[in-house]
Image (tube, rainbow, N blue to C red; front, side, top):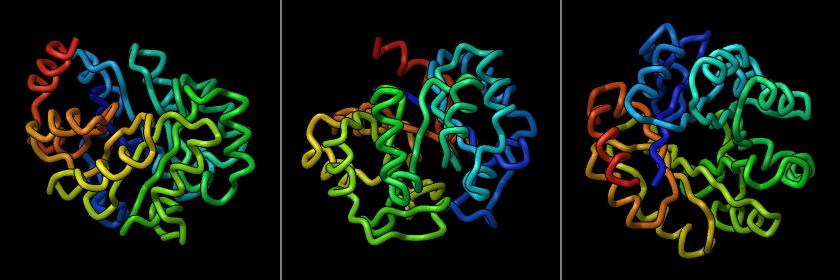
Length: 242
């Protein structure tokens, strides 16, 4: 299972929110590049980079940070937050993103998201299926849609989607443990999907459990920044997985 630390960006700084609420912002580092380099130094190969300013303004904003991290580390970056147009996508890939994550766009403009899967290939486009009460949430989680989570994922699986990041918003940033039951349900019903678990990771012991369930990757945010999971533990886990 891939270990994917998260860096969320507001005003060019590395922050974390709780349940996606911008009013709960905690700044952990003024310099995201510094954080990314520390991850790399501990054997981390992947990074989940979220442009929270972009998510709010519905267009890519912090692409310079993406460019910095991509050009000064060898991390494979998946980038999301506010990607709404072909132009946004072009900027993200030109700035060094390895993959992009589309969430709201996949709900609100299926035609364009479907076109991206066809144009760029299923290995480049990740479906961001973020859920509240098993309903898909959109617009930086500020709205809930009427889309049921599992059928939504299955629908995109038919269109060729392979990678899905699923965050249970109720768990995000709360350090109360991930939604094991929800992930088990998705993996049982959307067979063959490469599911990346996100939200709520609070202790190292949860990682082997997610791997056992069949998650392809896990995104870890606050647990790293709050020192609940050490970089040493992650480094060891990655070495042992090889």
